[in-house]
Length: 164
Image 1 (cartoon, rainbow, N blue to C red):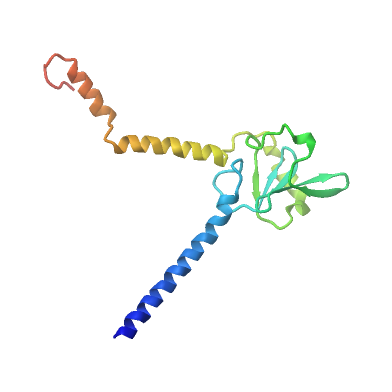
Image 2 (image 1 turned 120 degrees about the horizontal axis):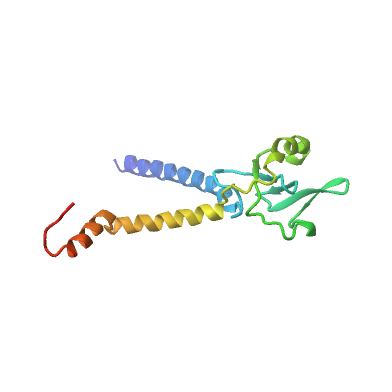
């Protein structure tokens, strides 16, 4: 009988270890995305920014751009883009290997987004969630605008009861 109980405990323990490992692997890339990355993508290997014709490697945190006659990969953008706002520009998520090999196709497909500033970035989505979470906390404390409105109205109606 003891052997069956021990076997069942070991079997359950192995099952929990497998689930935990899968959860860690899923969230690794999500945490590494920059705050200026677009919202709505669980996984992103590259961002293409059509406004400046640059690719950003999310995993290695490097930029790839065309300079001279070849593609260059560096950890920082070149000086000509030092005043460029990464939060504002449109980013296209690409999960291809070496997407700059298909640069002509990407430029033709996504050039219309070059001056599109409507994309929501992770930083702003987090702020919005925190704001909404604050509203939810206020509702959890029992705050109800209708009830408070009626209480205030009753307070000033000189004891004539609740009029609705």
